[in-house]
Length: 74
Image 1 (cartoon, rainbow, N blue to C red):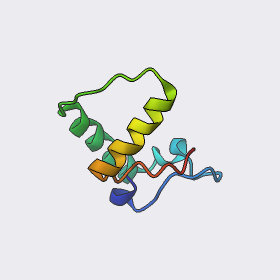
Image 2: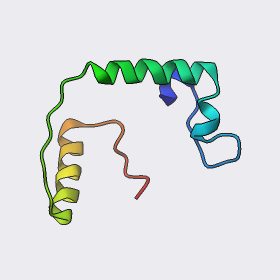
Image 3: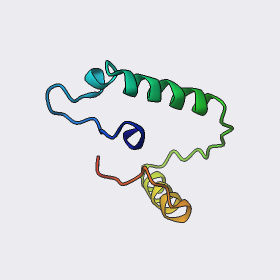
């Protein structure tokens, strides 16, 4: 989303997700992204063990070179 509108949500007043959705460019990009996701096929792997889950996520991120898993939120 940030690539499309040139701005990423932050925790600063007036720059959060609730504020961004009021911007027309962001609302349009969000709607387009939701429509694209609805058309996707997907598969999943269930892993109930937390340690294995963390390792699996890290492994998959490395192998698939996923751009949106930077772990900055942990």
